[in-house]
Length: 125
Image 1 (cartoon, rainbow, N blue to C red):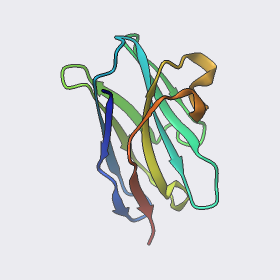
Image 2: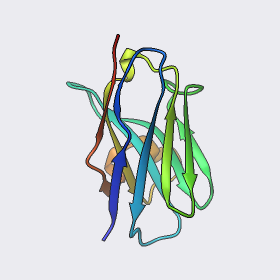
Image 3: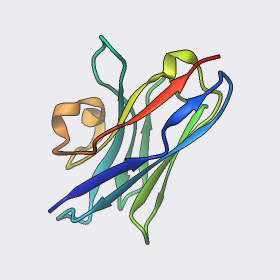
């Protein structure tokens, strides 16, 4: 059984930093993608970053390039999202997802089979 568990959300002032974690267990393949998505109230779910496990290819949305960094602890199978220079528009529920997703499909949430419960990120002064 695949489990995806996020942690690390919270509230921060503009310009601040947060680190999100995503622990995955039970995935049946050695190569798959892990993605971070976010959804603000009244908006569609948006792909933020993704990592192709086993190949170490990363993808970033234009809105977060240069501010967000994704990494992966292979031993613990935990993905980290370091978020710096946070802006109010980064406020959203952040979800981690796992699936057999490659290349240009990484931002399509329907391509990911397994999802975590989400963690709230609020950027406000």
